Length: 369
Image 1 (cartoon, rainbow, N blue to C red):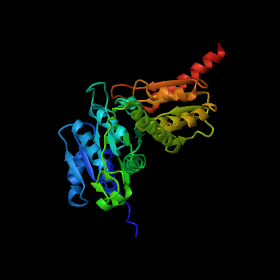
Image 2: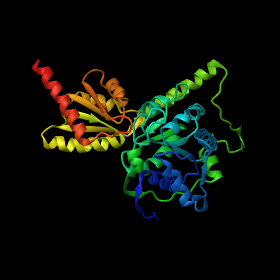
Image 3: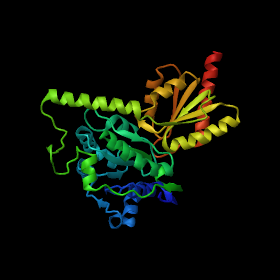
Image 4: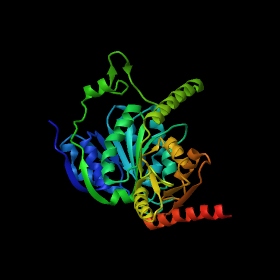
């Protein structure tokens, strides 16, 4: 019998925590930092160790947190951590170790403005850190970008699914707007945690002790022989190619007849959608593509839309990071412009509308000349 859905009014950070419990998460290891501290606080308030057996631990640092995720993921457990921009920067070594050793795990980044300690206000300036990889080596992290509190809850289950399907770290790249805002959320039904026997059967690679046929499993990202390291890297690249082929996700809004395209993710996409509604009332056929996976990036769909529209406006809460991926996808077929706010300032729908109108005016002036 299917369990009834539970609907609550929650902050984005609270939705992350409650969804983690309901998704059968085995362990959370984190460290408080604004604007994501409510994730750890909500877990402590809920005390899931008394109901589901989930471990919740405030680690001594972000470095300790990610290494606990490394260890837990290596045993086939569904484990995760969360932080904000400076804290995730400290985790980069552990994330690349996980990617190299093919260990699944989930990282949540509720972004704040930088660089450095910066501000506690919202930002999207960790796009490069997430999609380019802040650690060393040739590796990729699956990156999901929620734009609502509902997606904060939904993406926990999806992130774990993708992380284990591909034995790879998965990162939910949120921001301070989505983390702190409150919306109605439908939470997933409670799932049981896997038993040790189920983990051993489902994940034969996991370090669950001595296997009857295989001996002990162990994990490392160290390989001293260059030929073997190259072979492992080629294996990783083949895996990343499969992810690019199968896991691209995006949402389109009024793109069918669009003459101009806005590309935005996360909270910036919410502002852009309102701007499009106002532009449509003025007779300007604007549409939006919202990348849901920032990696793999929806390059092919953006390239297709670029042949339909006269221009593309990328809106971000940063100085211009995703815009570079858009320009690579478009390959010069269509002009690409950027509008962003920095240091924790969030662009308003009016500002985005004005930026698109200015882009159109530039086209008109060029044609007139």
